[in-house]
Image (tube, rainbow, N blue to C red; front, side, top):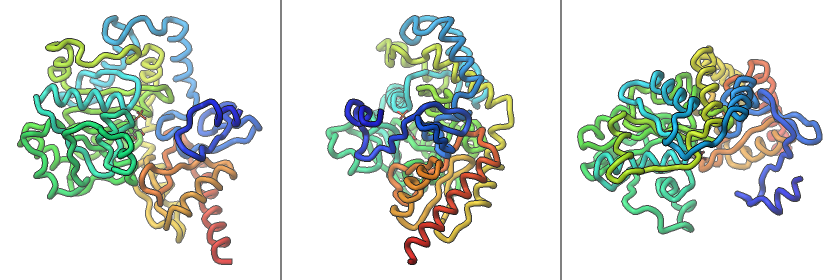
Length: 397
Ligand SMILES: Cc1ncc(COP(=O)(O)O)c(C=O)c1O
């Protein structure tokens, strides 16, 4: 399979990890040779409830047997999407009550950018240096990393950058600004948390000049940081909330949420300000609804903070310089990219899945399913410590 994978399936990089997947359950992925891999990555924060959680599988199977695609987004009332949007509104603070469902994180970002322009009548968007918001051309225009995007220019005009956590830069948000888009916790940059009430200060500045605060919760959202959404930790409410990844327990989805009145502007003058064929797909929405119900009726979200403590207490080693992030959105910072590569590649050989961050080459992500057990945490952390000792031995002798 690997040969055909490399030959016929378009690749994203020169050296894909290439595990030949047979099946996956809970915190484990199994390959065609029957080898098991303990998953500390969860499909990059997407498998919130682990692999093939019975409630998600059941929701998908029941919905697929009942109906799948029946009409483009927004024309027919379909139970799973309606219930999902309603339950989200019940879980979110005012005025976040109207959700537009799409197919991926980047599409949700595109929708949020458009909505901010439509709602303010302005054209400028401000993003953060080292930000990542997706790979379509609008989202890529927000990427705070020139070397990753220069081959694809021209991109969107009217994008400015500020430094995350730098209050002095807030003066660059002006009456020309439609929206300021920030990751609640910067992911690709190295799991950087907002400091000193930074997000509150951004929101205040936005209110002063009539700009909208857009928070990208595609990674921290859906319980990963001890609250349903990361922003709930920082006493701020965005004007537009963007979500994706872990939302549907392993099915492809994205969404953006705003007030009813703001969102209503997309539907007229001109009508169909945002349209999508498959957005709100009933099978995907059923998976998201099952995921959200599980998260809101169990202690899984609260447990992420206990599990974070467990990780932090176990991952003590001279080669670990820092552990960044919150809850089960953690990144180990090691001395250099070579050590990070060693952990990811040798970890795979030992049956532990780890992965890199997009821009911070010294970091290794730990974003397991929220359902991971303490024993699994201990097993994976022991492997990491073993690997770091091996690195030390190889590089001393
Ligand atoms: C913070 C953030 N925003 C946006 C995206 C894009 O989401 P998608 O890959 O579903 O388009 C990602 C994906 O990694 C992300 O981490």
